[in-house]
Image 1: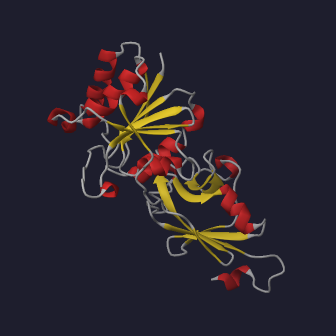
Image 2: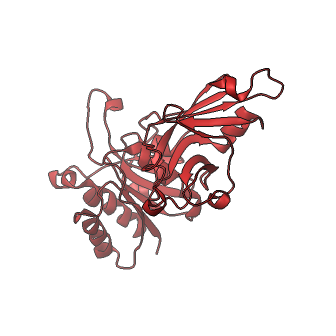
Image 3: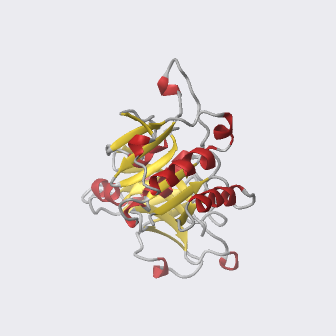
Length: 285
């Protein structure tokens, strides 16, 4: 049986995740359900898209991804761009099912979907009360049971556009931001390793944050490059610049969140010192 993944903002306190899984297992007792996360910040499609993008390469072709973040449809008959409609999106031989509030464009970024279908025949009031269960999970089960996406919706070529937060490039500097805080309290930024290398060109740098109170001037290869409780910067397995505290737990003084005070959307600056420049690091501040 194929794989179904779940990404939602339902959390684990309530019964909602169990209801969705119960519906899937009722329809397909042998279903292979994988939780990506149920701790997405409520309605935060940027956060959800970050998590989903970073697992796609690890799932096989044919995987179906159910997205239950900001799931409630909004219909604007006068302006389709203001609507958020349940859709099936086929990309990289995987299938995504959810409400098109802009999350599909964030997942695909500059890539093109293979197929897009607007889900039809789910217009009853009970479908809209819990769309993650009554629409998205139901459609996923029907596909796993052999129905084709084209039989469940009308093929279209439009995805709602959402804008992701991109780093700002200035002379010899990248100004990025924290886009995600993981379970360990590590702060993951939108500065990629490729961007860092393209702009930095191997030059020395100073990374600072929190009104320049904290400074890092080297990239670690692993967390254990520094002592327990010390701050570091490294490129994570997702290729993003990450600011962390090695073994950052309360007994060591805290994580990057609790000790350094980092939060989502905080600004991170990387200033490069070109070789041969008359300036030195002290003159950068």
